[in-house]
Each structure stands twice: as C-alpha cells, then as structure tokens.
Image 1: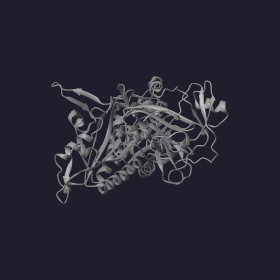
Image 2: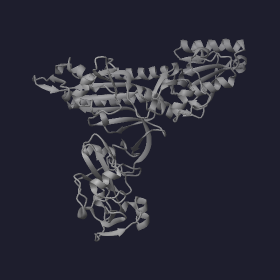
Image 3: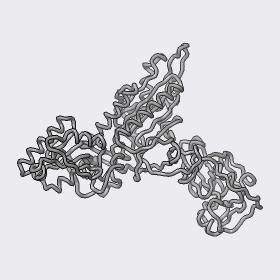
Image 4: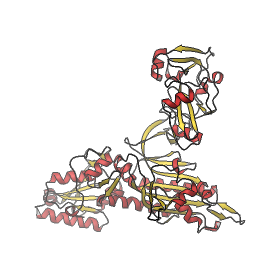
Length: 567
C-alpha cells in the first residue's frame, strides 16, 4: 500500500470525547470515525486488523472441528418469548416492528436463534456433538455508550454454540474452546488471564472470562501469585474469616449522634471497622432483602442476586427503608427487624462484641453477637473479595489487577434446549435434551484491548500478528530519486516475500512521516536515507523497543522476517 493513497486521515489533537487510550489513538490514527454514539465506521487500517483477528479465530475454531455459518441479525420475538427472555432481557435490546406490526429485535446474542435452528434438523445422537459458530455484528442499546469500541451499541463478535449428548460431552467441548481461546489470544500477542466468572444474562453455570490485563480495564480481577487461581471479583469465592474468640458481653445501646457511616462510628467509638456490622437494604423483584457484611467489607451484589435468584437488584431508597423496616438510613441493624430475607455473610457470624445500627436515629448497639442476638434467614458468602484476602484454593494472599473482557466461555447445560424443546433420540430411542455451551469473543473489542495494552506516548504498538501492515518503508526525501527508487524496490521485495509492507511515498517532511508511523504503530520502520545510498545499509527500527538495526541492502529479508517473528 502506498501511503499517499491510504485512506487514513490522522489527527494531531486528541478529540475531547475520547476518554480511553484506545479510543483516542484509533481516532487519531485514522482507524475509526464516529457515526453516532456507540456506532463507528471501521476505516481501512482498522478493517485489516479486524480481518486478521477474525482469521486467527477461524483457524482455531476450525481446528477444533467447528463449522462456520451466518445467522440473521433480525430475530423474531417468538423465539425469545419461548425462553422467557423477551420480557426480561431489558432496555439494552433494540426492538422493532415490521409493516405487519410483528415484533423483532436486533440480535444482542443468538442462543434462541441457534437452538431453534438445530432443533429442526438434529434428531439423533449420531449427529452429535455439533459445534457451530459465526462472526457477525451484534447490537445492544447501551444506556451510555463510551470508551469507543469498548462499550458500543454495534460491535463485531464471534459466537460459537456446542451441542452434546451429555455433560461429559459438554465438558470436552468446553475444554476444547478454552484451549482454542488460549491459543487465539496468545497468537494475537496479548497478556491475559482466564478467570472464573458469573454467567450473567446468558445464564448457565461454569464459565470463564478471558481478560486482557490493562490498567484501563473496567473489570477488577483477583489472582493468586502462588497457584493458578484467578477470578473476576464478582465471582471470587471466599472462606469465612475466623476472628479471635472473646468473652460475650451484654448487649447495650449507645448514643452516636450524626454517625451515618462506618468511618464516623469507628472514630466516635474508638474501634476498627472489622468490629462493626454493615447493613444494606436492597429492592429486588423478589421483595426487599437485607444484607449484612463486616464493616470493612463490601456486598458482592452479583453473589447476592444469584443467591436470591432475582432478575433485578438495587439499593433501596430512604422511603422504602422507613416503610419496610421502620428504621432510619445510616442507623440500620439486624436486631429486631422483621424481614423475610435477612442474609448474613458467613464472616459476620464469627464476629464478637460487634457494633451495628439500632434502627433508631443516632443510636447503635454495642457488644452484638450474631448467634445470640439475631437469626439470619440465610448465611452465605456474599462479600466482595479484596486484595490480600486468602486465596480460596491455597490460602495465600491474592493480588488484584484490572482487566478488559475479550472473551467468555459458558456451560449452558439444558437451559435453552429444554425451553425450546431441542431434543435428540439417544441410543435407546429415548428423547433427551441437548446439552449446550456458548463461547464468545469480542473481535472489535479485542482490537481495542490490544491498543490499551500496547501503546506509548507516541501511539499504538501493534503485535506483528495483527498489525495492519508489518513494515513501513520511509524514504527521508521524496525529492531524492535514488531514495525513492530504492524504497520502492524494498517495498516490493518485502511484499513479494510475504511481508505486508506500506511505502510512505508522500512528499512530506521526514518528521511528519516518522510521527505518523509511530502513531499508526507499524511493528518495523525501514528508513532509506543517505546512509542507505552511500553505505548500502538500511535502517530498521523496532517500534516496541526503539532498537535500531542496520541490514545489508542486498540481504535483509530473512533478518526482517526473524525480527517480526519475535514481535
């Protein structure tokens, strides 16, 4: 590609709307342009990167015996109504009606579509296992699209669905996809962790998220540096913390004026937060729920939601608290309240002589002992993991990091096959539900996550495997015929040898061309200047390290190939 003909209008200034590095650099390097909030045009450079990621995905999917198809983006409501998700999926679903007033949606995901397809054609155990995938646009009406391609309303995704005879078959399919995902993200040159996660709106149990490690990541993950354990903080399971035993003291009430926070209570009473009980009230579609955690801990709302088995959960407002509990916000406690669902974290049950709200303005209980003074409806792990908590596998202390989710693998079991009556006849002629798995990769999100992990003050630093072009050839002077002729010769030789090269043939100052090369992020930059002409040496600069090497102008192809293989 001649850069003079490349449609990649670069920007010197960062657009004010761009909050994260990937969004800033993709706009500045001419890779994307905004069409509407959360909707972008992929320019030629970005499309080359996307196609390379897609090809890696296809190769690894096909290697596991998967078959590619392409399903409709527009999905009829009837499929979603069969599973019950039409009414509960939420406002993120783009809904539309045709001219006959029939309901449709723009596909946010394709579980209903693929299951309906397979149930009509697969009848015998001999047709299983079956793994089908597509790479296609998805649509979710994000309330607040932001961060460019990280949270958009239209995005490119690979979704694969496995159909097996039984749980053993599902386990095998799941392991195959886990292996394939590991290979995909390694080939893309990413640093990532596969972490235990929650199934969310897709459902099912048993799932891992593949997280690209980046400081800008929206998701918090924990990992153990001593063993293989890693999890999304929302999923991480925790063991009960045992506190040193104390002699139980008599329950008392103390005046605590104006102390609506744990910090205020601990300051007034001269105690530490681990001697307090935090009481939180939630509204759910199953009714009001009260949750208890230690004062220095936070409620894990995903765990709580799964425990209650509710579709919606949010902190209750003051009016609900007063009407339901007869208590005062900031002074709520578990003693004496009448509520059908009082859930205590297991660590709370092992506190001695703790402090909690007395359900009266400006008053707290002291010397609270859970087993003596109140009785929870449920005792469970409902707290959010923190750095330096003990690892649930080996007991050593965990660390935290930020991650960007680029893929997730789910065990759906029979959630959708039972709802949609996707069955097969087993070897004995009995009808059985197919056992399903679901496996997604955000292709456009992977591109953005790669930039979040690979950049510096000058621009993008592409891993060679997915760079739009692997090498850019830059003559110092476009007016020097010898430099231009040699640059053209090098450019053509690189492409002929299978190395994807661009030739910056523009009549621009060298500084402009060098800045654009760094901004776009070509892994290697070949500079042709007076040294090349006079000494027969081409200068090759490695974008990632800044290392500068000199190769013989008559013998450089294998050296460049070797360099690229390491990038």
